[in-house]
Image 1 (cartoon, rainbow, N blue to C red):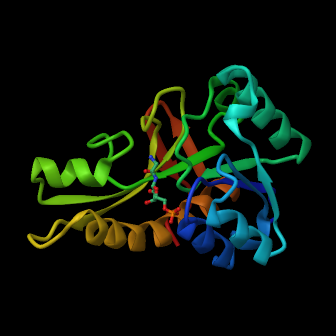
Image 2 (image 1 turned 45 degrees about the horizontal axis):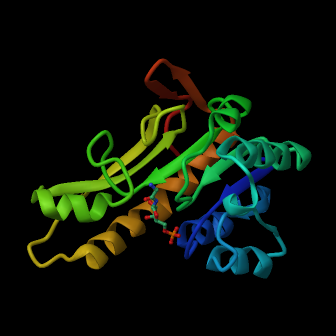
Image 3 (image 1 turned 180 degrees about the vertical axis):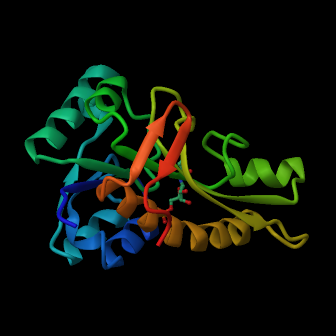
Amino acid sequence: MDARIAVLASGTGTNLQALLDDPHVGHSIVLVVSDKPGAAALERARMRGVKPVVLQPGHYASREGFDQALTALLEEEAIEFVLLAGYMRIVGIATVRAFRDRILNVHPSLLPAFPGAHPVRDVLTWGVRVTGATVHLVDEEVDHGPIVLQEPVLVLPEDDERSLHLRIQEVEHRLFPQAARLLAEGRLKVEGRLVHILEGLD
Ligand code: GAR
């Protein structure tokens, strides 16, 4: 598989690490972009010789200006696929349109349940017994695009936000590289909300 992949990350970057470590996907990651100058994800990129770039929203006059700068950067770097690995900003319409069906997001709940910024906390507040991880294509609405892969995680009585999130992330670290590989190999066929996986899962 020979593709040019960018990963966008705001935080710790454990999902980025799982992607970098994946034998099929890792070598195709050529750019890591963060909106946070101190994000540990940037150091993970440096350690692997992957170009780290900081794009701070506060440096742009408008949301659209930031969005255009991000899209331009991705195009300058000849990026084909974009992976949102704990990227805590809404991707703007210009980027979504430029990379239609080529952006994946990982989210720590079973979408469409519990979208938003605090899904693990919300799950515990609601008292649901089963949650999980979702990898989906990004469209113009938040946490909304067609679902590629999902896997459940049981909520245990003794769970707090941290313990539950850690178990969900273990699943994410498997699911996200798998979905990224399917996308980069051209094995996802999108029909409305449905994503067909060509040749099945490996
Ligand atoms: C992950 O659990 C990811 O699903 C979540 O942030 C975490 C980042 O962890 N993303 C969202 O909540 C996006 N709505 P990481 O930085 O260690 O990969």
